[in-house]
Every structure is written in C-alpha cells, then in structure tokens.
Length: 377
Ligand SMILES: Nc1ncnc2c1ncn2[C@@H]1O[C@H](COP(=O)(O)OP(=O)(O)O)[C@@H](O)[C@H]1O
Ligand SMILES: [Mg+2]
Picture 1 (tube, rainbow, N blue to C red):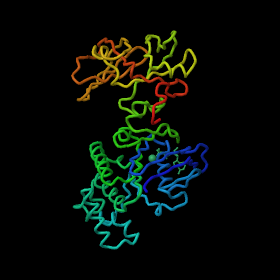
Picture 2: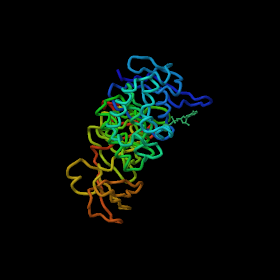
Picture 3: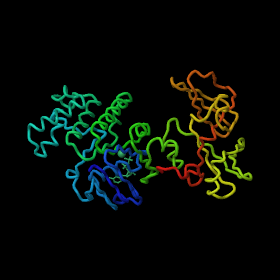
Picture 4: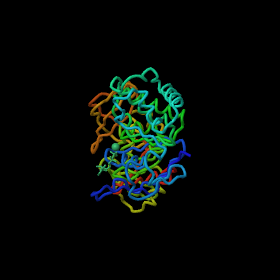
C-alpha cells in the first residue's frame, strides 16, 4: 500500500515562535502525483523532510500505507527522496551511485545488476554507467539521482525541487520524463516546487501552501477555475489573475460591482452567494484572468460583459498569444488576445470583462465569495 496519511501535522523549530508547518492534514492515495507548491519559506521542504523522517514531527501523526511511522527511521520508511542538488557521490561511478542503496540492503549481486540495468534503460542512461558524476551534465546528473530513487522500488517517492538547477529547456524536458516515469511506475509521489507551472502541469492534485498553512487542495483545473482565496488566485496562473479593488452594492434584486469608473450589474447566479455573505456594501477585490477579458467585439457579443474604457500601455508578443497591458484608470489589466491582433501602444480601446468568469474576494479576509460550494475545495 503506497498511500500516505498526514494527520494534523505541526513543526516547531527550536527557538521559533511560529510553526514552520501548521495543521497539515492530507490523505494521498496510492499512485497519486501530489504537488506541494508555494513561495520560498512556506514550509514545503520541512513538510517533505518530516515525511522522509529527516526532521522530527512536533505534533500530529504520519502513516505510510497502514503503518504509523512517526518514529521510524528514514531508511526503514520505504521511501526514496530526490533533492535539488542531486547529492551524488562524486567518487563513485553512475553504476555504483545507483547500486549503492541496494548493496547496503545486501541485495544479491546479480539482482543488483539486473535492477540497475533495467533502471538505466528506463532513464536512457545505460551508456553513462561507467562515468563519474563530474563527467555528466546537470540533466544527466538528475537522471542518475532519479535512477537511485527508482531502483529501490519504494512505496513513495519524495522530490524536493528536483528541476531547479536545470535550465529552462532541460527543465521542461525532465518534467516530461518524470511524468512519463510516473505513468509507467505509478509510484505514489510527493513533489515539491515553488513553480506554479510545474504544479499545474505535473500534479494530479496540488496543495498550495503559504506561511506554513495549506491554502487549498485541488486538482489543477479546479484550483485554476475556483481559487479559494486571493492568495491562491494570484499564485496559480501566468500571467497572473487581474485584481481590481471595488465594492459590491445592492440594487433591489441585483448586485453591482462598483469602482470610481465602473458600475456593472452582476449576473444573477452570484446573487445567492453574495446574499449569504450579507451586508449591503462590501469591499471586495474582483479577479479576472487575462483570457476572460476581450478587446474585440466578439467577446461582447458572445458573453455577458462589463465594459470599460482603457488605454494600451504595453504589448507583449508571445508568439502564440499577445498580451495587452491596458490602463483602465485605477489599475492596469493584462488582456490575452490572439497573436496578430491589430492593437498598438497608445490606442484607446474599450475592453470587455466576462462577468460569467469573474471572481469576487473579500477585501479584508481574502476569501472567495464566488467559489463557495465548489467541490474539491
Ligand atoms: N533547521 C531549521 N531551523 C529553524 N528554522 C528553519 C529550519 N529549516 C527551515 N526553517 C524555517 O522554516 C520555514 C520553512 O522553511 P522551508 O520548509 O525550508 O520552506 P520552503 O521549502 O517552502 O522554502 C522558513 O521560515 C525557514 O526559515
Ligand atoms: Mg525548500
């Protein structure tokens, strides 16, 4: 059983007032590829190291499969860990590096040979087995580190930013390789990264953390479409979600979003959640993704939209898309348009916000007023 169960886990480092990890509560099912993501210092490595047994758990219970492992030493937890800095032994060959864990476990020589060769084949590093780590590129080193983790056939893989030392191209390539590997081996994996793109593309589920606390747990698309709070909304997605501070006001049976320059009546479907959020006038932040704002007539004709005037300040050509940076008075919003659109810097234009795709967040607490009741939150 390769499942993992974290029950109300806390980590207090000596001499620190605030916990580095607070009430981390999560069930990871067998075969899952779970990604822990969040900004630097939010407690990701601490959490992973507690799962690995490299760091004592201050409070809470940890199970791997059915087994309670709080006090089990790292080498007896049946996990393998892959680090950012590869941690290869410089004076051992690639073969020896991969074989070491098995040898320490007194696995028979012919079996070690069989397993190392099979692993090398999966990772396409068979031709490198005689080399020393110093004779490898960064990407090759990381593949050897993966090999060392795989060869032991553990119940759980733990990976802490394994791609951070690679350049962008190699990172994308190795990311794809890790996913391919996971689809072959189906080993339960907890993968740590600060990079939301990695989280979105790799995770079967994502856990977003901030200041030691879990913000949301959800599959990537649900996280993207229904962020629970302002932090998650701003963290997941690139370019970032646009935010416009304003107020929600009530007009008889409908609600409006209002700023100095904007007055939009909100679609009826938001009424129940806004009603339950009570109070007549409420400071909010409206969030909308760049792909849900249009600078063309088509958007307006197809969807319920709020319209406002703006001026194009900057244009970013991405090849497949074009991003317009449009100043709408109190703020500048990013609009994603198709490549080859005919806009120019300095143009005055009307832009259309799809009101069916907006998010409203409580300005003070940051909680979403519009994604309540969505499953997976
Ligand atoms: N050994 C340690 N002693 C004291 N504080 C630590 C130690 N390791 C990490 N921390 C603190 O715990 C918090 C979480 O760190 P870490 O888990 O490394 O974050 P992340 O991996 O998300 O960047 C940070 O504030 C960090 O400074
Ligand atoms: Mg870390």
